[in-house]
Image (cartoon, rainbow, N blue to C red; front, side, top):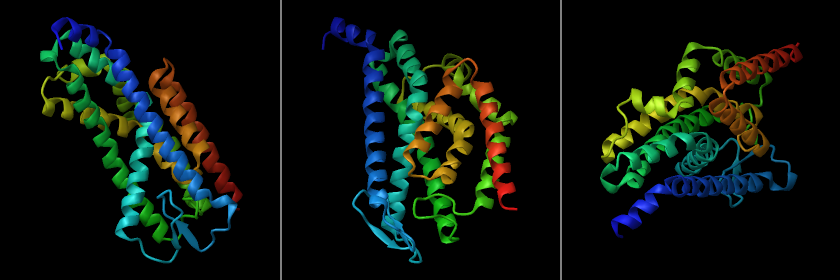
Amino acid sequence: MTDSTLEIVLRRDRWVVGGAIAIIVALAWGYVLWLANDMDMGGMDMTGFRMIPAGIGIMLPASEPWRAIEFAYVFLMWTVMMVGMMAPSAAPMILMYARVGRQWKAQGKPFAATGWFAAGYLLAWSAFSLAATFLQWVIERAALLDSRMAIASNLLGAIVLIAAGVYQWTPLKDVCLAQCQSPFLFLMRHGGFQNHPRGCLLLGLRHGGYCVGCCWVLMALLFVGGVMNVLWIALLALLVLLEKLTPVGRWIARAAGIACVAAGAWLLVSLQ
């Protein structure tokens, strides 16, 4: 590839990187829809059984301990779901990284550097997915998770909702959300563009860590509405997108917090 051809390609970084993100998100959502359709089982009564999110109709007695393959499938489910939910809101940051890389030349390798940055971001969410898998295992072993991977206890559901609502108003939420809302300022505060893989990976991991800190409690709400409830997944993904990409994102986060507390309080009252 000649220098002039390379320059033309680099000037189209937004299309190249944006197209790659769109393809990854589409594949992730396709996988989630496939799993959700498989776990629906045509409305069959699944009492006493649990579905393994493998997309091939595997189910086991609810009392049977988890196997290693089930843990792997659940971890894969969470990881792919996080990619589908979080990548759209991370797109401005990734696109900014590619653009800055082009402007700084990056020794002719801004796309490779951007790939390492995105990998670091996704690594942070993979770590979260591992924690979510362990949490799902704990809840399921305590017989508090139904066949559709939703919390079966209204009391526990209310506690999760109220805790999520309160977190939306905390200073930690503010700090993490601020880092996610201003891609360019994030780069400037943390050393700018890195032109070697390790630096790119660590910077992406740091940004992903802020993103996890901002949104982990919203992801915990998946256990309330159902981990494989596609509508619930889409609504939470939209909420994350609005929080990060709109000028009133902080107020949207607080409004969502009030709604969560109200919903949790309503569940508690319904227990009386």
